[in-house]
Amino acid sequence: MSDFTLFMDRMNTFSKNKNISQNEVDLLSSSESIIHLAAPPFPYFMECGRSVYEPGDAHPSRRNLGMFDLILVEQGQLDMGEEDRQWRVGAGSTLLLLPDRYHYAVRPCEQRTSFVWVHFRALGEWGVSGAYEPAFADRERHAAHFGTPPYTIRLPQLGSLPGAPGGSAEGERLLRLEERNLSGAVWERQRLFEELLHSLDLRRREPSGSPAESVAERTERYLRAHYAEPLTAASLSEALHFHYNYLTRCMKRVNGLTPMEYLEEHRLEQARLLLLRTEASVASVAEQVGFETAPYFSRRFSARFGVSPLRFRQRHTR
View 1 (tube, one colour):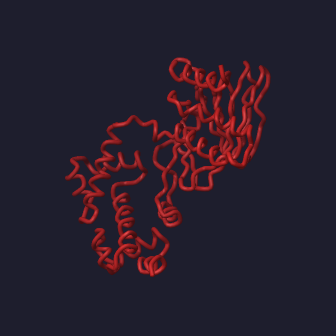
View 2 (tube, helix red, strand yellow):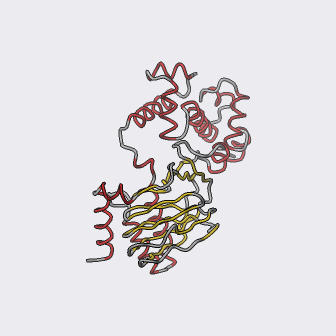
View 3 (cartoon, helix red, strand yellow):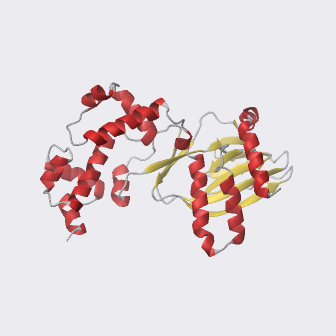
């Protein structure tokens, strides 16, 4: 039997046995941490490897590693600490150590322990919290720089590998590509690494069709269909038959924006397309996408894209 098959069998066994998973993934601190990574740019893969510790061995202590350290435990157990937090990480579990913290072993391994480690960097903003809302305040600056609002990757600091194929398989494939160490494998390594992050992303793990997701999708569809109209919190609540505060909670949970923030971003995207594809005046564009006045539209467009509507058109058209 291949290493890959053994790896997948082991991960699937742990993911199906919820009693083992619950006992092994024992969070010793009192609050859950979620790592928020803004993309684009997406985090990029640096290196990976497999470590095997015998009883009595301990993970080395490190400070300010400068890159994220994602640990995927295959068998055994690691007792790890980061600053004042400590975790017990059992087989089938993951731990994400941060690049600017002090990491250490809480105690030596009591049994043979093997784990895959993946080092990666994040060029975009990142933050830590215990909530689902993104940790980024300056969405407009991100949108102006990258041309799109940030997608927030949400990774649990202590988590578990998903049972479906695509969780543990990428780690094994990354190891095989790393052993080859060929320049031609760089794209494949990055693709597999992003698939691994995708499998761990908490947003992906939310149940499909959950109430929050359904309400958020209804809200998005309505806003896209009626963005040129003079929408308000009250009119939106009346049209969708939910209190605006509930709509806001659902939208924030699913995509990190309030309904009005989502509406403005969509209006600005539509305005950008009109400026590029039509000869309509700035005032006409503002009216067509739902802004009440041209001056306010110009201010919001400049904040979003870093340039006035007129200058944007001159820069990108002849």
